[in-house]
Length: 211
Ligand code: SF4
Image (cartoon, rainbow, N blue to C red; front, top):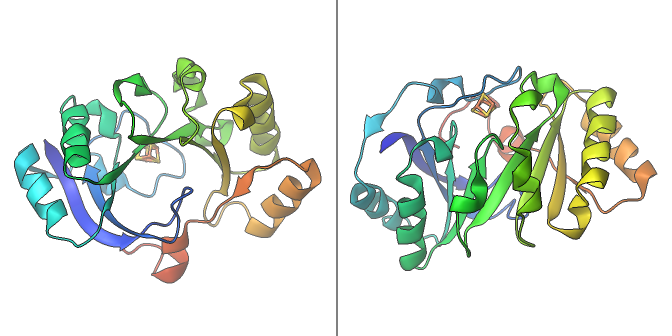
């Protein structure tokens, strides 16, 4: 597999936010979001076997692992990697950009599925069937750049009845939408939408890699 980086940090997002976590960042992405903060994962990386990845992950005393990218589902071996991590007693999260079929990831893998809003400029590339195949532990994440994105996201939440199916998270695009503004908009809806910040960007320097 082509691996960009493997590191141990605080999980900055999702319903697992705040917990120690090992991250496996895979190389390659088919999208080019306007606010992308991991452009270095488009190409950079080294080939590693699944066994080598598992060995590195197991060297950390941590049972929570996230496979991220880039877009992890671009590499067909990702499914086998998640299966082997589960066999190794890990709690496995996969963060995916929402453009590919997530049904290849079987329980107990938790899928963190991005829904790209218009502000990303990639919203037309979503694989919408993903929203009909969610499990209660899955996370559906909207990164919002402005009020238009917010209203658009609410329509999607309602149309696919997402609040009945999974955890719904709204996240402000870092340094583009003010967290306070988004919080106030969420409060006015009275809906159980989870406001989330990218914790790692507040703990460490926002451009720091490997955290
Ligand atoms: S999906 Fe993620 S890695 Fe890919 S372009 Fe968008 S923000 Fe960047």
